[in-house]
Image (cartoon, rainbow, N blue to C red; front, side):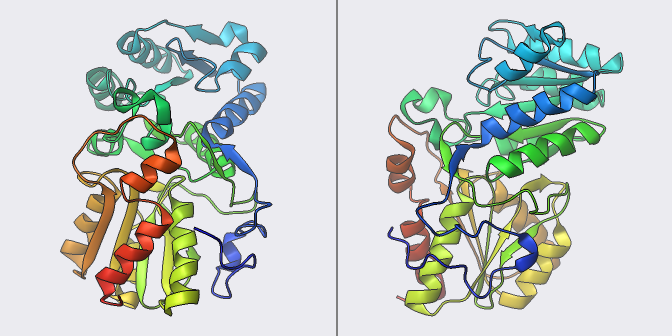
Length: 338
């Protein structure tokens, strides 16, 4: 979709400190996994308790910088994700802060049992990096596209689940995970995507962040797909007169229930957008809150109970109906504004 304006919308939340180039071709693109790699390496300089473990995907998960800087605190376990989780739990019990990094389909996918028992049940201070999540793995295809990882992690007691939207937010999520005592899952993407937040943009576990204020409908989203929601909100406002409130739910668990309820009371209509199955993800989490606290009409946009396939992430977002153009159409249908 062609951007309608290069300027910040008047209703943009100034306290979100978003990039001045947010709707400009000049906006930088960089992968969220790079934010994790840079942050954990930088943190490792001051915190000697940080240890990184990888399962034969060191470069792909951007753990290679840490390996190069601190080879004595890096463990390559090979293709053994279950072992990786168990080793990390043991390190945590000895006072270390271990990060385990792999594709999200393998961790927390393949090693979910070990994460459930050795990490969550045991309340060990393990940080799980699930890279290449969502459809944006692209050519790797369905076997490597984690579309269920939010569901299987947020259901676990003691687990914190974070889904950063871009490079800067990934850095902040990584640093916040280090400070947080207990299991944390961070969902990351492979492809370079819009870097629309800045180093001043607030990030806090358990807190949502309103990016655009509106009155007709609230759009909740998280991860790189959030930028599609932002672009859609611009077209909905400028071309169709629909005022959208856009809220970043980077902290999926714990969820900012207060922010969700307050916005629902304001707009009385809610849409969620996610690069994940519609079952068990962000939409489900928001519905669990609103159905009990303040029921309103709601639309969940995501992958509709199917696996992915090979293709570029732009092609896949289009086919599976989660890009900006589809969001515009879905919101208009939902509001009866077609």
